[in-house]
Image (cartoon, rainbow, N blue to C red; front, side):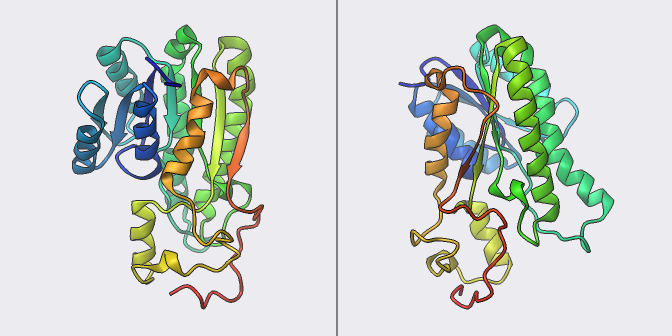
Length: 263
C-alpha cells in the first residue's frame, strides 16, 4: 500500500481523471475527500469507494470558503491532511473572438486561482505532515489548440504556479508541489463534449494517427497510476516538476489538415 494512512483531498473527483485518482488512492490505502458539483455522480463514487474510505463535499470550487470547507472536512473526518490534488477544471472551447473578459476571468478563476486558494488553505496542515500538492494540468499549457485559448492560458499559469511553489514551499515548509500534464484522455465528460460537437458516439475509435499513434487515447486510470508516484513518499524530495503524459511531443497541438478519419 503506497499511500497507507494518508489523507488526500481530490478536487473535481466525482467523474473523470479526478474520480480515477480518488479510486486509486483508496486502493493504495489512503482516505479521500471527494469534491465536485454533481451530487448524483458524487454519491455513486462515494458508494463505490466504501464507507470509511471517503467523504463527499459538493460546492463550487471558486466559492470563497470552498477551500477552507474542504480542509475542515478532511480534518474533521480523518484528523489530518497529507496531500491535495488540484484536479477540478473547466475544459471549455474558445478563441480570441469568443473569449471576452468575463469569460476569460471565469476560466482563470476555476483553473488557476482556485488551485492556488486550496494550496493556501491546506498549507498549515500540509506543513505539519510534510505533505505534498499534485496539480493536474494539460499538455495544452505549452501553447494550446486553436480553440482552447482561455483554457490553455489557465493551464500555462498553473504550470508556472507549480514551478514557483515547488521551490518556495519545499524549502520553507517541507511541502512538495508537482504537476502532471495529461494529453487527450477518454473521460465521461470528453465523450459528452465530442458528441455536443457533432461527432458520432464511437468517435474515439477513428482518430488520426497524429493524435493516437497507439490506436487509442489515454484512459483516466493511466493518469491515476502516474499520480500515485507523486503522492507517495517514494518520490522523495522531488519538487517543482511538470511531467507531460502523452503519446508524442505534440507541443503545438495544431490539428492535422486531414481530419476526415474522425467520424
